[in-house]
Image (cartoon, rainbow, N blue to C red; front, side):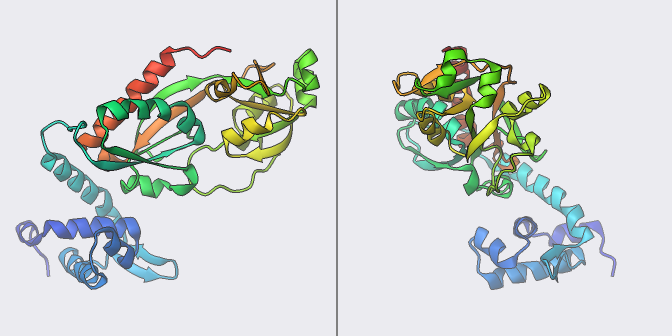
Length: 324
């Protein structure tokens, strides 16, 4: 039976579009129900109504779970756009009252961003928004899907890639600095040749998601320092791989290891007598720190307020040129 456009519009319950959006995100009836705080029978009933409305199965059970049909994939961006537009329309027109707000923001941040940017952000929040709480999550705690669904308010890190739907902004560029023990013999003649003969600590956590083991021969995945060396036809001797900048800087106190890491992180140890800071004996392209967030949160007043605070703080810190 062919249904005319007027009949379809009259039959649409806005809640059904919310259900469909959740189902297409989760690809699982139970998880979609949990996301919307519904019972599984209620979500199953919603799926039946959606199938009737669109005259299509929409989600089909396969060996890989619930798989969307071609019609469902066509509907997915349309439904998301409709819901985003409605959400924008019903957002309160008043400004976010930061001084009296009581809420939790979930921020995924690398420990580099957590130690160099967020302390200044927290200092401002204590005065401007004393009722706000930050739940700072690590890159391994969060997936791109979590961000897309708005389960995480924003992510701050350096990213090799990012979904095109995400909004993002550049916070700052950072140079690199070597951290090593004053007892390290390489300090007597800190040339590129001696740098290469020394033992090194590799530290990085780009993007997000559960990490996998590092392949020392996969130069492109090793990051800025090793890509720069590779362009010179050189390779350093990495003895320790870590994803934590604080751990790497502690390892730098050993007299046979060099840690090459972003300057703003290295400067946190400038007053530590057990390490010294030196400029690397080669040119390394700058690190780019970015903030990204879901299109679902683009127009949320509270999120807009916090994003602006973070960007303004980063700009202020970026104006304080870090020097050794």
